[in-house]
Length: 180
Image (cartoon, rainbow, N blue to C red; front, top):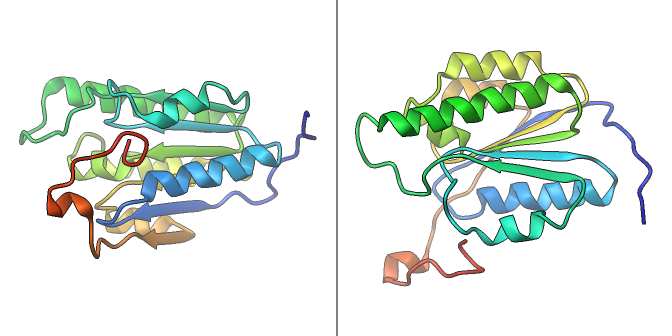
């Protein structure tokens, strides 16, 4: 069944941050809701490429949802980060800018961009400029731990996921289909 296409009258900026589980999952939930109402969604994953995340398999089946993942799929532990990590983040941000400026999508999700900002893979001032220049109808979602104060200030909605208890801390490894 093809849904009637409509545009959001007001697109806001949402931030999902904090040390708890569920930031990307919340963004996917919003994306599925939007697709069910005929909206078009584009997700750009910063620092997540190169890994078999379950959501990637599902998204391939949805015509209104595009996703592009960047990165090596490994935790970035080196300070400063490797040159390839900087290049992946730069390419991700270039694509994000192109997608937002095009106005073609209703929802644009910048997954783990806050982590990329924290690692100084991209500049906060560049992201703030993108937020200020987005077309009126685009809902922009930024996820990831460590959202910097300027991002929090620019957002219309901020949700902090708080880690109270997690099985990983008791030695349970990440589980396929649950954590990835």
